[in-house]
Image (cartoon, rainbow, N blue to C red; front, top):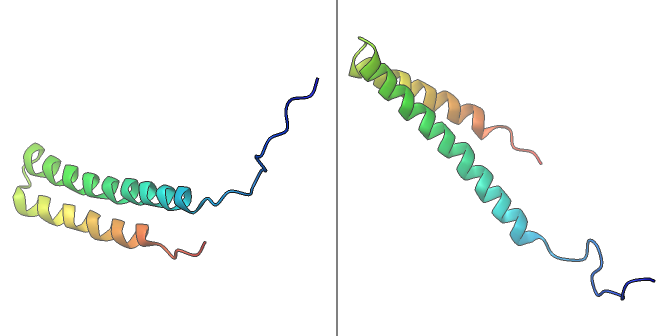
Length: 77
């Protein structure tokens, strides 16, 4: 026996909200991961090596700048 007819038609709904939420979550994940990686590098170099604070700050800044340049990307969809 066939099921009841439905008002649902595949592909008819507007998905603008889902797309914008997806892009927000991906952006937060991407940039949050970069901030976390740079901060963890700073802490590891500062406290776990003999390099000191200045070397830790420089290495964290280098990772942050390179990560920003790489993650910003060319961006064509």
